[in-house]
Image 1 (cartoon, helix red, strand yellow):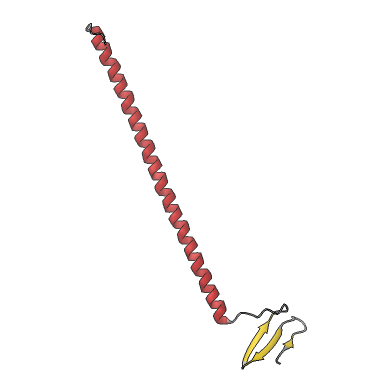
Image 2 (tube, helix red, strand yellow; image 1 turned 90 degrees about the vertical axis):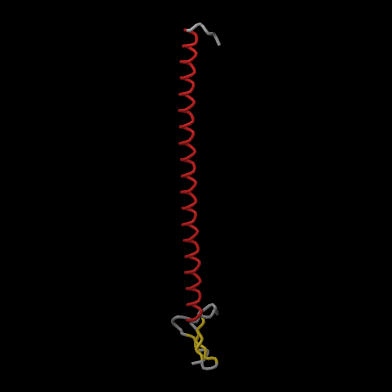
Length: 103
């Protein structure tokens, strides 16, 4: 059976040192089960790393949004405080003017 080629599939079967090796019609060998397992584990590892990067990026995006929201809230508070002080200043100027004190 060594170097036998399946007429239907075009796959070559070759026995080497009591091992059966299979080859695609283009000559490339089939992967062994240990090699397939290693590739599967490597792919799972890469997928886990990619998923972790996505989770970390979402966390960073949420942190950035929180900081932006905080900055906007502080800006609104500062504007309110400035408007309030400006109103108080105008009221005080009006009272001073009523008392005859010009500024």
